[in-house]
Image 1: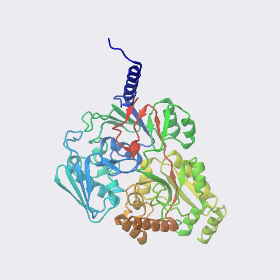
Image 2 (image 1 turned 30 degrees about the vertical axis):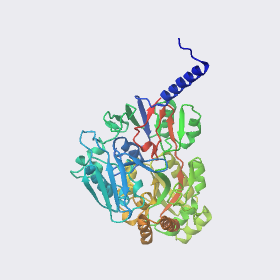
Image 3 (image 1 turned 60 degrees about the vertical axis):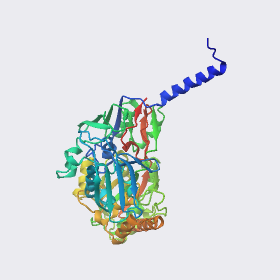
Image 4 (image 1 turned 120 degrees about the vertical axis):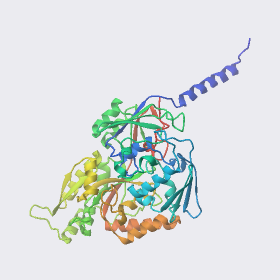
Length: 526
């Protein structure tokens, strides 16, 4: 009979304990996760659209060449290896073998080439991001070679799924409006989830792809995306367990402290490093009053960023005078605004501009549209109050997202607009599109909607896009920030602090720099 010593018993206990914790740590298969969004996506594929709701769902089906860690270092996805030439003008990607589209067709370099050129032509940011790409060569089915007309020092960070999705060529090559392609409503991709159904105004359902190239992922059987426009209802849904996860602070900031007290809920700030955001008040520079610099300066003096941060965002944000978010520390200009909060100065400038108060105290009236969200509505209310104090009447126009986009970018019929715009990982990608005169494009969402046109700024942005010397590139962006800070084509207010709120039973949802916008292949429930 074998005698087990005291030491042996201790070692056995440790081994059993280690096995227990290993089993606990291993991802478990099965179950359903429910993601909540406040706005319905205009399309389910981000090949020609950059709205946050589309970004949240696109990568679940449609993948990218690369993914990025929290420090934005590239990692393999549809590409397994990559190489950039010493002159920065050739990018060679080795593609993953054995990958199938959800309809059974083989994924190949032809899909990559076609997708990159679609992005260059149709995507609001891709038009500038991929502008240097002259051609994409496909020497074999597993190699894609991007040949550039000039260096693009930011480009290696641009291949994440939500920003640069690789779509099936065979479903797009017949032409037509990319935004109206049927694949945008019932997408076919290479990703861990297959599209099941979209009930407009209610929900989207995705099911596990059993043939996913990265087996045994994904772990969950089903992903449901619920559309809940009302902020209070989203908070209740988290409390009742009707939804499991939401990102970019999916509830009213005023509810955060109450929800933090719920032991079933977690709050995560990781997963936002790929896409910093700046909240802005945009001016239509073709509008009679707003084309006058002194009027824009007066509005800048009339708005307190401290009030915006503390009262509108409940302290969850970092004040920014610059169009480049503070999170992009290398590029962000920390110098103060030339137009600090000073209502009396605003009054004087409006008088000098030739807009005295009338008998009723009003100088003129402006219409204000806001990108629909609870926090933007509160910001619109504050702007109305702030401008009213200096004699500018503001009429707030509330619409749904599609009408907002149509009014600002297609009809171009607005005075003031409140928007939150993503800076992403580099100013060439996130900021240039908003101030570059060549990106004044009717009908293209989140392009240069202010009609700002300054040849000096154009040159600075274009030079920065190709400058390979880091110090010179930073200097170009600093001068760009100085000029737009003085000319105020818009009023940059702050960079929000975003939380991903999740039920603690949901694990591994924010492993990469794009967080919830990633493909959810690693997500599991315990």
